[in-house]
Length: 458
Ligand code: F0G
Image (cartoon, rainbow, N blue to C red; front, side, top):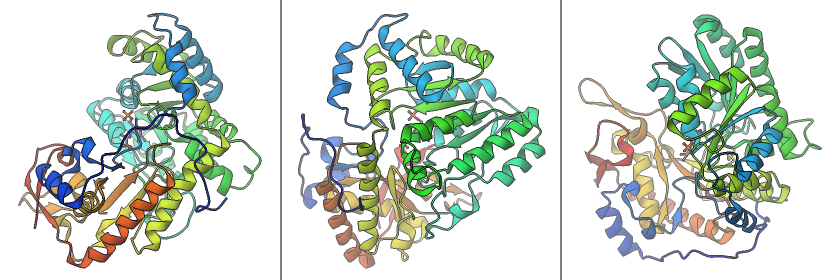
C-alpha cells in the first residue's frame, strides 16, 4: 500500500460534532486566548493536533469492555484480564497499574533516583526528565548522530548512541546509574523509531555493566511497524512478536497507555525483578491505589487490555503510519520544511526554516501555531524557543536549537479528508509566509511558560 491510497480500516458508529468557524471568528478567539492555543476553548478548535495522548477513539469492543468493568477494590476480573494481557505481551512477571505514564515514572524513577544517580536515554520525555530531576538525579540524552541530519532518510533516527552509553556508564560508575531508558518511538526526538539492532546493542552494554534497562514503551506498536518495514529479518514476524522480542531485551517497561493502548487514561509498570516490583508496589499503594487497580477503574483496565490487542492489528497499524506519512509528505510537497523521515505519531514542521525572516526572539514556531489556528482552526504545539528558550543574566534569549511545531495525530479520530483540509491550510500558510509577522511575549510564568504565556503579534 502506498501512503496515498490507504483507507481508514473502520466505519463510524458514533460521531462528535466539529463546530465550524470562520477566519474572522478565529482571529477573535486567538486574540482572546492571547495568541496561545493552550488557552483556547476546545469547542473553538476544528482539528486538534495538540497531542496524540489520551485522544484516541475507542472501538465498539472497548466500549463493550467498559460495561463489563469489574469495580471490585481487590482482585477484580478486569485486573486479572489486564494483568494476563500485560504478562503475555511483555513477558515480565510483575505488573503495576498506574493512572497514567508519569505516575509510573514517579514511582520507578523516584525509587531508583536521588542525589548522585544518573539516568541515560536516547531522549528523556519532559515528564520522565522532570521525575528524575525532581528526585535529585541527573538525566542525560544521547540520541544517535544520524538524528542531527533532519533531511536524510536514515530509517532509525530514534536510536541511542551505544558507544557513548558505554563511555558514560564507565564515567559515572555502575553503582551511580539509576537506569538506561530507551524511548520507543523517540517522541522528543521527532517520533523517530529505534531499530531492534540498536535495542540489542543497548541491552548488551547494560548486561555487561549490570545496569537496569527500561523501555518507555508508550508507542511500541508504532515502533514495531517501522522495524517490520525497514529492518532486515523482520518481514515475516507479526508486529506483536516484534514488540515481544524488544521487551525480552530489557528488565522492564513504563507505559503511558494513553498512546498505543488506544485509551483516554491509564498506564503501568511491568518488571522482571521481584524485589524492585515489591518496592514499587509499596509506593503504588501509598499514592495511587491498591495493587490490583493502581490509579485505574475496572472499566479502564478492560479498555487497556482490549486496546493493546487492537493496536497490533495489521490493518490498524498500516492505516496509522500511512496516515501520518500521508500528512507529512503532502505538507512537504507544498514546500513546507518537515523533519524527515516522517515519524509515527506526529509531523514536525521546521518553523525556523519556513519563516527565515522571523528571528528566534520573535518565535517562528509560536507564529506558525497562531497562523494554523487563524487560517484553519488547527491546533498544534510549539516545540522551540517558547518551550525550551532560557534567558541569560542580561535577559537576552538563549534560543532552543530548533524552532519546531508538532502536529500530533490522535488515533482513529480524523479521516483522510480532514488531512486534505490541513494540507490546504498549509498551502495558504506558504502563500502568506513572506508577509507573516512574528510575536512577542507580554506575560510569562517562571516555569513551563508555554502553557500559560501571553503573546502579541508584532
Ligand atoms: N513518555 C513519553 C515518551 C511520552 O510521550 C509521554 C507523554 C509520557 C511518557 C508521559 O505519559 O502523559 O500519560 O503521563 N506524552 C504526551 C505528549 C503528553 O503529548 O507527547 P502521561
